[in-house]
Length: 153
Image 1 (cartoon, rainbow, N blue to C red):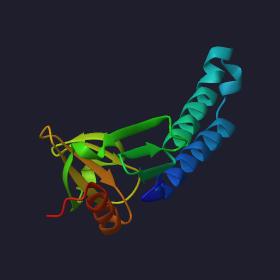
Image 2: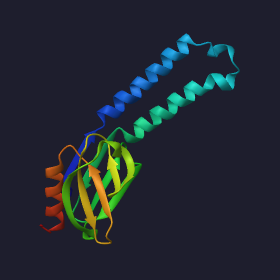
Image 3: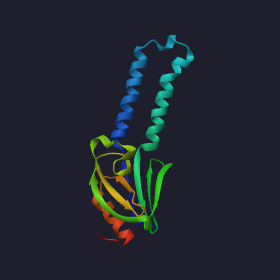
Image 4: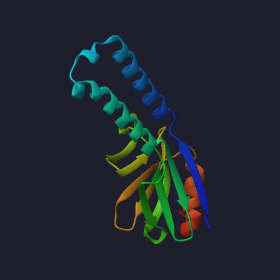
């Protein structure tokens, strides 16, 4: 049974990917790529496929909390992190710096999963490490983690 579940869409990531694909398409129409060897002609298509693959993998960020674990996953769930609730010492809302970016990042505050925005919840783990989860509802996520772990600061 899920105690908490929320999916945040990566709207900015989607618009950036669409813009890049459109720029590739416009560039291909105006270029003379068709006169080059086949392997050169395939480069834009392969690039667009790679970008679309990245978008599929990172189009959203889902956080699920059950009675025993918290799962943070991107897109369809191939990329995810599972944290046992008994490993969590505490949680607090934080604001990321713009230059921390989006996706999976190693920040000065530990690893971060983020799909959009600057708000996050920083989790303190028993082993002394920290982990940040980007979210558009930081207070609700923090409260859910605290309720699930039964620890209040």
